[in-house]
Amino acid sequence: MENGQKNYAIVTGAAGTIGQALMVVFHQAGYAVIAIDRTAPPSALPCQHYIEADLDRFVSDEDYAESLLSSIRSIVGDGSLHVLVNNAATQVLGAVEELDRGDWSKSINTNTLAPFFWIQGLLEQLESANGSVINIGSIHARLTKPRFTAYATSKAALTGLTQSLAVELGDRVRINAISPAAIDTPMLRAGLEHDGKKLQELADFHPTRSIGQAAEVAEVALTMAQGSLRFLNGSTINVDGGIGVRLHDPA
Image 1 (cartoon, rainbow, N blue to C red):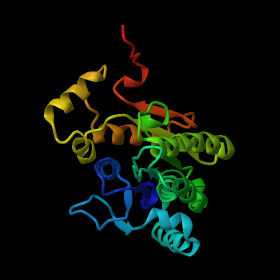
Image 2: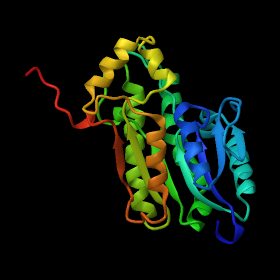
Image 3: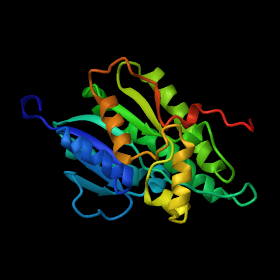
Image 4: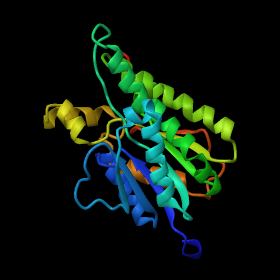
């Protein structure tokens, strides 16, 4: 660190599989990690600070939001906030006839608006550090399937947010995104009913004939955050095993 100054990285959704992988790579790269999640911390997380936060409430309750932001500003202090990774997300699934206003509110608040308010609330600290924001999107922003309407819409909006903020903030703070496809997580395996055959079929469907690993997403995020990549701005990097460019037709 320069002159002994701490360089901080914030990771939301830190308790999940991708969140923990993100913490590992940023910790190993020398960052002091501030972890944020709605659950109590799992054991042995590689972070300096862990903050429990409800992102739905963070969006709807200004006093609650300011309290969280003040805590983070106090932690950073005279340090340098180099990276904010908006990784937290909720996946509400349902047919068109089933989705209610609560489903939509939760989806948009957590997946789209919370990232914006984290950026807005910590803009001064990020700008001072010539910092970088990385939004973790999803392949569902551009390629989706039935019952994913709320989730896909919220992630498509996150892509738009990434592009819009990159244009508006310019050289003040770089804003980029990562769009993962199938990543090996407990949620993915549960969706496949922990059926190894289904998992292999899904892997084979990708040109790489594999499922993505959380560590791969994290390594891409670390590379994108490096200060040497100043020209990388407003971009979405697809970590999808090539499935996003594969043509699916009956032939």
